[in-house]
Image (cartoon, rainbow, N blue to C red; front, side, top):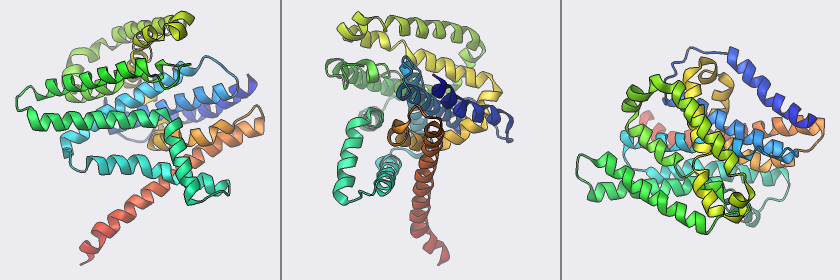
Length: 348
């Protein structure tokens, strides 16, 4: 327990410092700065819960689930906003670049550190990565369904109700995905791992489409919504922990799990919008900038944490350093590509 407390302090102390380090940034509900902070908070919940599990502290898994739900919600929101600005052109180029390049850098660096780098080892590690990292695969599936939804919309929907029909199509696809997940769960010991996240991405898209209407109608009722959704989420978390529901009748558990982490993710979102010390926290913003890389890094580095003071400190710092290096290398590659694509033209 003492090592978990130390690990928690390593996260909590920078949060406290970040509360007082404020820059004059405008942060409004669901703008880029706001979602950046939410993503930072999200990945920290995953790191904290996973670190606790590796240090022998049970029962934190649903905390990571809340963070994942919040992250996926922000992804759905961001995709819809991006689509409104840029359309569907170059959709997969952007997505593949953003997803795959950091993964490749992480594998190469990890293999270099372990002194076992080769083309074959990189290929094997890449295969293992996608087999073991359910969240990355889930995000890709979300992207595919979003893309297919937009294609169908462009080809067949000409009515003014396009936004509504797109949401219907997206919900149907996620409904099919949910049914498949109930029949063939990725992990029978925790069958609800992906099932409980089925509403998050569509809700993010919905929020992007109707942001102004949602704000106008519900933002002044945030205290009531927080209370109701908090009670629903915590109640269903307790219900889904019953053995018969969790393991024996897990399909029922999958349905019930929808009302666990998603309502609590909305509670977190509303709390961040309500309190300045949360939505303007510099530490959350910093982790938000490298949130995706942190998720990748914790799969490599955080798994090596152990009940040893020096190890806890070193692994915690190494996880953030590993993510930062991946992020900087990805940005450097991006800038290099832009330079060779546009730089020479500007010079001429």
